[in-house]
Length: 360
Ligand SMILES: Cc1ncc(COP(=O)(O)O)c(C=O)c1O
Image 1: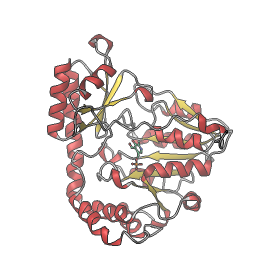
Image 2 (image 1 turned 45 degrees about the horizontal axis):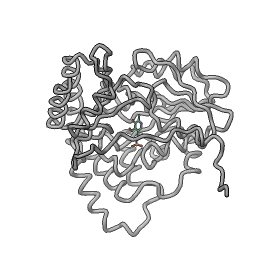
Image 3 (image 1 turned 90 degrees about the vertical axis):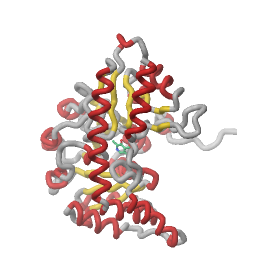
Image 4 (image 1 turned 120 degrees about the vertical axis):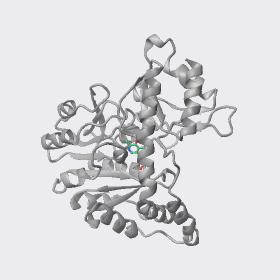
C-alpha cells in the first residue's frame, strides 16, 4: 500500500541538524554547541515566566501587543510595522512561503544558517549559494548570484556558522544594487554582540520597500526555549506575512518573559561583555594551540583545524565528547575542517581548554 506522497521538492530537503545535546556517559555534559547564552536567562525574565503560570489556560494575545509596544519603545520603531514569530525561524518560513514559488530561487551566502534553505525549499523554490571570501559574506558574489528568478535573499550579520561580520556599509551597498522586487531578509540574530550599532539597520532601511530586519530573544536574552523572534519591515510586507501567520504563535510565558528581559539592562550588558571577553579568550587559547580561529562578532568562535595538526576536526569533536564536552562539527555546513564552540561560562571554557589541551 502506498500512502500520501509529499510534494517532490520536499524530498530534496536536508532536515535541520541541531547541535548535539548529549555525550555518552555524562548525565550533565557541558553543552557548547548551540550558541546559547552562557549567563542563562535574565532573572527578571525568569520571574515573569513563572508569573505567567496563572494564565496558561488562556490563549495568548494574537498580536503580542504588550511585547509590540515594548519593542517599539525600546528601538524607537513604528509598532504597526512589527511582526512576531515562534523564534525568528518562523518568520524566515513565513517570508519564504509568501514570496517564493516553484521555479523561483532564494540566494544566500556559501555558509548560511540552515533554517533558511529548509524554508525556501519547503516553498518549492531553489537555493543558490554565493561564494564567501575568507569565511565572510561577499556582497558582490551575492549580487552576481541574483537572477531574474530570485525573489528572496538572506544575509545574517554577524553570520552563523562562521561568526564573521561585515561592515553595515557593505549591507547598504548590497541593498542599493539589489532589485526592488527581491525581498531582503536581514537576519540580525547576533547583532548585539558585534561592534557596530545593532539598531543602525532600522534607520538605514526605514523607507526601503523590500527589507525585513529580523531579531531574536534566543541569544542575547537567553530565551531560546521560549521561541520568540521578531521582524521590522515595510507595512506592505508585514501585512502579507500577517495574513499567513497562524494565530497565537507567541506563547503567554514567552511574551511575558521577553517583555521583562527587554527591560533587564544589567543582564543584557553582562551578556554582551561576557561574550566579548569569552571570544577574546578563546581566540588566544585556540591560536596558542596551533588552531585557526575565524574572527567572531558573536557569542561563539568557529575555528579551522589545520591539516598539519595531525588531528581532524571530527576526531577533536569526538575526543571532547568523550570528556563530556559538546561542541559543533560543521560538516553539514560544508566546513568539514572547522568546529564551532559557544562562549560558555568561565568554568565551562576552562574545562574545554583543559580537555582540548589534553587531546592535542
Ligand atoms: C543566524 C541565525 N538566525 C536565526 C537563528 C534562530 O533564531 P530563533 O531561535 O529566533 O529561531 C539562529 C539560531 O541559531 C541563527 O544562528
